[in-house]
Length: 341
Ligand code: AMP
Image (cartoon, rainbow, N blue to C red; front, top):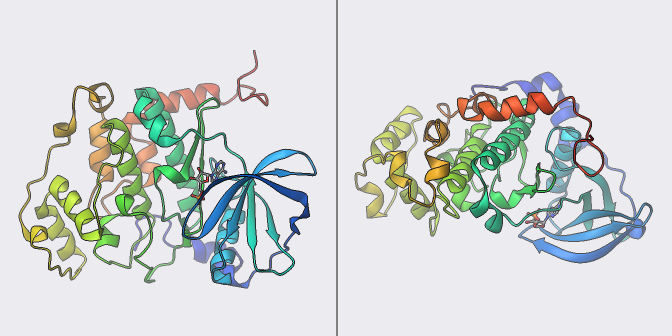
């Protein structure tokens, strides 16, 4: 059972989490125009669009025909989280007259491509954006929801405004105790160990593993910190860093039967000290006091040992960020995103 927020959904009630039984008022597509394609994946095609009523830029996520239940879940999650810190805003839901295509209209973010951004982040940027991601997740988890696909591509960063928005809620799910969840979620390089050993009683803490992977990629300047060629190789990459001893303890603790035909997964690997990954290129980020301690406490096999989002926010690594947040809280911010003089 999750260490935190185990019963939130029971407390909030059926109307909060019962996404299959809520009705949606769909708008027609006439108010929106597509400008250009931004990207796409297994479940959707994403476009930049314009709202013809107010000329505002927006993002139109056209969902590929999937189960109605999945569409409802994404919408319910976005509505429940509306107004939360650093959560992408859902502006409208649109259905074409044939009801074949469903689209989500969302706030547009002037997003910097993370592959170009991460290599130029300063120490204070890394702290600032990681903290903002944790603020989003604290809110999400406190409301009974797991994102389940945290990765750099789902974290929109606007460098000019120094803001961050968490997107793509297509895999998000409501957490309930004593429930098995699908282990085929997430994106390989960011998948927590529990997913790689098909353990289905996972909880919010799987998102914190992915945060650990993102932090490692930022501070060590490695595009993906654990880069496996398939799920077994992904686990192997993790084991070669965290060691096999703790992995075996993890399996025993949760009575997980993990069988593999991959010989290399049966070899003993010692745990690597985090400092081993420090190089001349990343020294200014990775040797920061407390950075490696935070990483050590996020990248744990045992999901109950991982820091929660709230605990991670309180980690000394973020002392300067918390001060900055407190001192700017009262400042007026105008539409340009800059504080007024
Ligand atoms: P997704 O399928 O939701 O991961 O979106 C595909 C791509 O579209 C993302 O990787 C982003 O580059 C872009 N994108 C999605 N949502 C937004 C947004 N709200 N603002 C700007 N770009 C977005």
